[in-house]
Amino acid sequence: MSVEIVDRPPRALLPCPARPVDKRCNSLEEAVAGIADGSTILISGFGECGTPNALITALIEQGAKELTIITNNAGSGEEGVAALLRAGRVRRVICSYPRSRDSVWFERRYAEGTIELELVPQGTLTERIRAAGAGIPAFYTPTGVGTLLGDEKESRIIDGRTYVLEYALGADVALLRAEKADARGNLTYHAAARNFAPTMAAAAVLSIVEVAQIIGVEGSLDPEEVVTPGIYVDRIVQAVDEAAFA
Amino acid sequence: MTLQDEKRIRLYGDVRPWTAQEMASNIASDLPNGIYVNLGIGRPTRVAAELDPAKGILFHSENGILGLGPPPEDGFFDPDLIDAGKNLATVVPGGSFFSHAEAFAMIRGGHIDVSIMGAFQVSQDGDLANWAVPEQKLPAVGGAMDLAVGARLIVAMMTHTTSAGEPKLVQECSYPVTASAVVSRVYTDLIVANVVDHGFEVIDAAPGVDAQLVDRVTDAKITWCIN
Image (cartoon, rainbow over all chains, first blue to last red; front, side, top):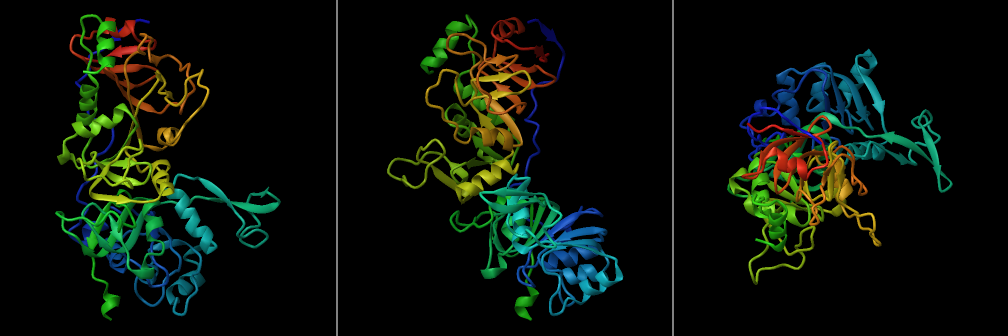
């Protein structure tokens, strides 16, 4: 073989973007900066438990619109997801249970025809999100076979039982709530507020987390205690949970 | 200097190839800050010792650790804390433990920035062969195939030839491949090269190594890109 000789600059770093070691943001505004119109956004929470209300409020102020949101419920009352719907920023909701005691804004927007709804069985919703974060593009599940939510789907019989094919569900952004974080973005949660957050953190290009408490840059969480490793987290910001003081 | 290093010196005449430590140092200096890196078993583990800690890089170990630290000092070992090569290990501040399935979800999900792997052969299209040799009676694969397709950037750290002097940078792998078209850059004891356009673009070379020597010990398209 012959060798071709070409002039080139000296050795460069590996072609891979650096990552911040300190992921703390100074404000909620900074934490939601850059979220574009038309984004798909995962939002943690089960009912009003573990919902990142401070980040959602900041997102409403930031102004992104035409959003697709993926979340278990579609908000209740006037705060959080309901506020986002009320502000008219959402064009599509992918969720399992949009109807709750006080889901006024979802019902109103849906009746108006200004938002689309994709209804997904809860276990399938969470597994589709998990699959996206874990690099699995699709999987078979028995949930939904022979129902209104499964009839249109590709199916396969495995060991005599019918399964439907479900596709991974990732997003541009995840807005999450956790209890404690260190500067590197490792997270812990409180009680049942954990719910969707660890799974969603892995399934978004940009994962943004509001936390009740941030440990200073000189300290870090106990490696045994970490629930969500910081590798999944891009930005963290401190936010007091107003509901806890209501 | 290891016995292997001495063998190579004989192969390459007057030219002194990079030692394993120098190869590790070449890689360490090319890693950007703050990233998450998996080091393959064997030679790639040496990269850790050459790295500037101020870069804030965290090492991933596929048995369930982020923030893998150096081997423990005498008397401070924990038998439950080992790396993927089954050697006693430590964990650094900012690290975490998780399940094996989570460790592989991290890999396959594209969360690991760089995987540095040993290689039997790398082809000019970036095919990686590092899990089996043709005559092997008992095959073993471990996490190599997951890492090779999952990490965002694959780097091969390898000697330039076999101990018999056969080229390891080749037009097409004759060994069974671990994954196709995945290697972005190779660090050998003679050169550093990017895999570009069905060939290797040489961007650095050990002192005294020239294009003629590299051509003689390589069975692939080589473009010399050093001023």
